[in-house]
Length: 149
Image: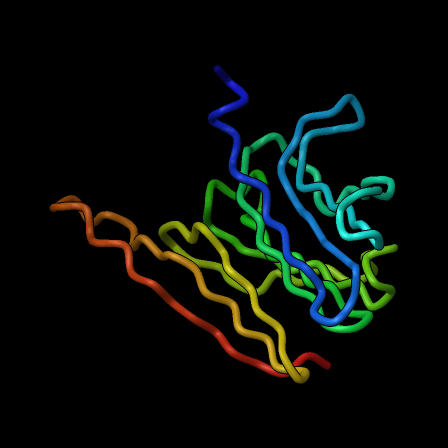
C-alpha cells in the first residue's frame, strides 16, 4: 500500500543513557514533512513529536546524537533532491533552533547519513550527477566532515 512507499524512519540510541531518538517523514494534518520524537525511557514512552522541516515531498532522514546535541540530516522537501539540510538541537531534542543547508548539488543528493562524535560531524550521501544527454551517470557516495560549533 501507500504506507510502504514511505521512506523508512531513522533512529539511534544515545550511548550510555536510556534516550532513543527518531526522525521520519509523515503527513499528519499539521503538515507533511520530517518529524522528530524521542524517548527517555528506552522506547517505552515517546514524547510529543516536533516538526523539523515541512514539505510534501517524501524524504529520508538520518539522526545522530551525543550528550545534549541531536542532529537530524534530511533531504530538503521541495528541492527535488538538490539539497540536504541538518537541523540542530542543543537541548536533547526538545527544540531544534538551527537549520543549515549543508549540501547543494546540480543533480540529486539522496540517502543522507549523519554521525557525531567528540564534536566532529560526518555527513555522507549518494550523489547522482545531472545527466548530460548521454547515459545516466552513476551515483557516487560523498562525505563531508567538519567540527560542530
